[in-house]
Image (cartoon, rainbow, N blue to C red; front, side, top):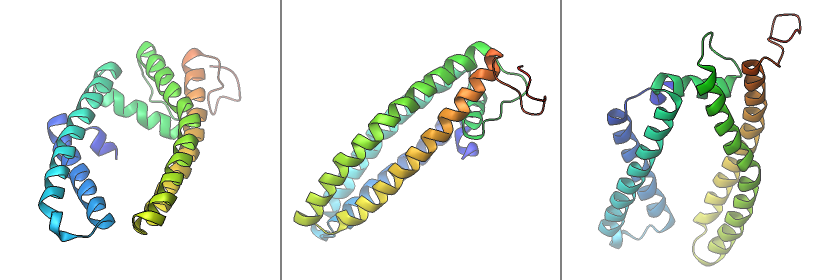
Length: 180
């Protein structure tokens, strides 16, 4: 995953385009396997992939610039996942980015359960009225939501630790418990 995060946009965006388009096409085909609308489904997958690639490209470019470049953005994400900070960091950029990331993860604590309930209700309705395929989507989506809740808890703990170390109020591992 880190290798993907470090790719330049001109290499990353074609991968995003193919993955998003294939996923959209595949889900559409699996939920309604009627082959008569295959060309229409391909056109809609193409349009969806173009729009989502543009959207993701803009978001990724903005986040990379704000973080001070590709390498710094990847290092911040790695630090959030692992709780370990590289030796030399730009404190101003890191504090700003970690605060922004913490805000997004705090929003997840509310949004993910709400989204899970809404999508679960919709999936049950769709499974009973449209296609039993929606039961599979419900299980997959609830699995993603459960992972998101777990990851949010870990990330918030790591972000608080990293921010404490950057601000000099958190004990550094291996120094006997004294503040940095």
